Length: 170
Image 1: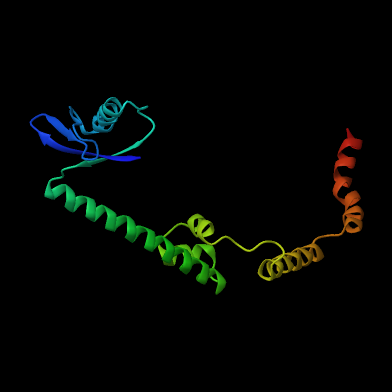
Image 2: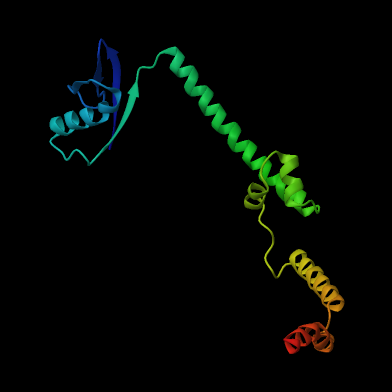
């Protein structure tokens, strides 16, 4: 069962009433104490366990507070919408071949955030397979330009020869 603890500021106290249970009236010093106070009063009146029901606190709010709550709710909705749009745009930019850094710069977020919003495809996918093939081709090109082990073996005596002469002369 769910009960509503309606509370109104009265001097330095919150006056509490529970419309669903006739005769439940209490008070609390602070708003954060209203639920516990109402729960205890309801449990006492109905002779039930205080944790066997839910209590929703409904304070009587000043107009300024109502305006702030509405604005904050609208802000949360706008942030969620912006986050969804950013994720969609990040995915689209990466699919078009933009780098993670460029996508981040265009969207005004960090490259790490782009990576989190639009993770790269798995190793078996075609885009990452193409990237892996390009990396392998670069490695082969670098390996072809590097000296071969046989070449290094031929150069070894020339490199050590001056040291050997120096050691032999002493």
